Image 1 (tube, rainbow, N blue to C red):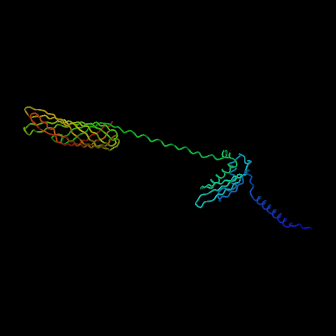
Image 2: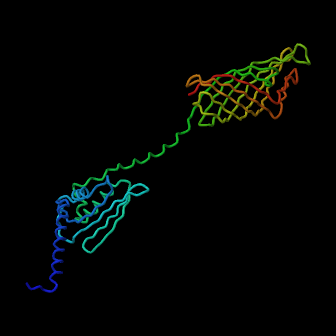
Image 3: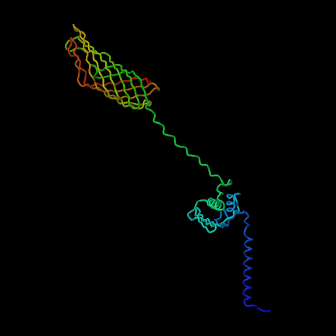
Length: 328
């Protein structure tokens, strides 16, 4: 036998190549066959509990659907890796290669299934851009349009209330002694402002004349007043008001017990300050309690024929009234 130079080295190389080929064949047989028909070479790594390679390819296939699994063109290769972050959550690194074009995407989230679904969508679009319109893709959730806030309601107009009242009055300083009488009033209220007109009359009083024994004079007093008030709401069960105003008083005197009886009348203005409170007994009726102070600038002198000057009203007088108001 003739030995050729280097024949031992050549035989060694041929044996090594045959062994490598057998190893590759064994590895290929150990790998699960990829029968999904996707034109994609995918390498996938994910922690336990996250979608594995088979589920990821199945998701890509579902998104591609029947839109052309084997589309001729540049070869597509991808490598996806999901890591569990120490601070919580997951991160995805997806590297792609289409022909000579390379790309890389990084995503983070709290659910690795959502990251895997995002990677599947990206790869499905690389295979066929029409995969975004697949009927098999899940429809986006319908978010109802926010209901616009209702416009603020316009402020309610101020409540209007009117009524009239009648009451008994007890006063000091209006006649020679403590006087009793009746008072009637009409009022109107809008919101916190009220106005009232009132008329009062007092029982006549008799005063003896000092200059003539047996002679006397009788006095009659009438008055009217106008008030402007700050008041609480007329709808409250218990409320009140504070009033300022003016009045006109009329005092009439008539003499008796003289040979030639005479009469005299005097008029004068007064300023007033009043406070009142009320209590509703029904929706249309309320009790009214008031206290009032009045003052006059100058004291009138009532001179009666036959008796002369008999009575001069005081500079100040006060009164209290209790009555009932009927509301309209």
